[in-house]
Image 1: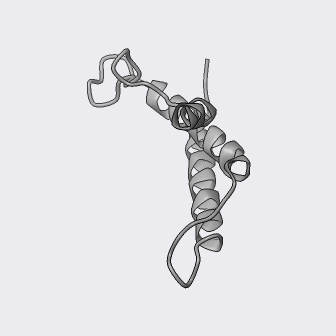
Image 2: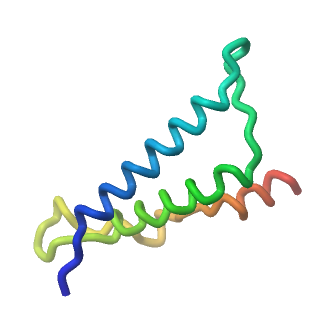
Length: 88
């Protein structure tokens, strides 16, 4: 099976840039505070997380410098779940 890993990396950078632009647009020029609704960033953060999982799970057999870094010690947090934890 061949995977176009370049597309995963490009999509991660697109999502990163989308998030940066979104945060910059919503940053107050007076006090530097960012005021956004959680709904407005949910999809961007979710897509970026999906891309990062793909990047983290990619490996090359026999190459310790390029191994899968997803394991029991590395947990992917989900925005909705963390938001609920904060609200409790």
